[in-house]
Structures are given as C-alpha cells and as structure tokens.
Length: 117
Image (cartoon, rainbow, N blue to C red; front, side, top):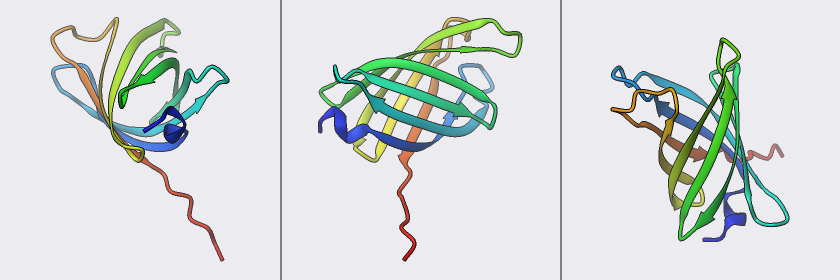
C-alpha cells in the first residue's frame, strides 16, 4: 500500500478517551501534499472540526491533530491507524486533556462513490 491509496473520505465510529468510552460518529477526509505528507480533517458529530498533519509508513498512519473545544481552548493530540486495507483503518488516539488512563479508539470505513446511471 502507498500513501496515495489513503486519499478520500471515510465514515468513522469511535470511542472517547474517558472511563465511559462514550461513542461518537463522524467523517475523516484525507489528502496528501506534494511532499506526500498526510492532511486530515475530521468532522465529529455535525459540528466539531479537527485538523491534522501526519505521515504514512509500513501501513501505519500517524497524525498529529488539533481543534478548539467548546470553550475555545486549543486541544492537541495524536492518532495512529493500522491500515488494514485502503478502505479500512483501525486506530487509537490520545489528546492532552483526555484521561491519561485511557485511549480513544476509531475505525474508519471508506465512503464509496455511488455513480447514478
């Protein structure tokens, strides 16, 4: 697999970095730049946007991300995904203000374009 295989849109199902392991859903959009660095944009629920930059090697994708929380405080973290196939990513993540006793988790499934004929 090469980094170009990961470009596209994914639906995500995840759990938060807390004792409740509360679930969330959203989308992940992956693009790459001319240096083959990964650019990621998550939309969690319908309102929270997160962005990040990372790299891909040996079917592992690592992204450092950031977002503003509901109090407009900047939060940062890191997500790591095992790329099972170009269509399925299995990952975990941690952020600076999350509970350090837990990791968040995330599964990503490529959104297939359905051509209408």
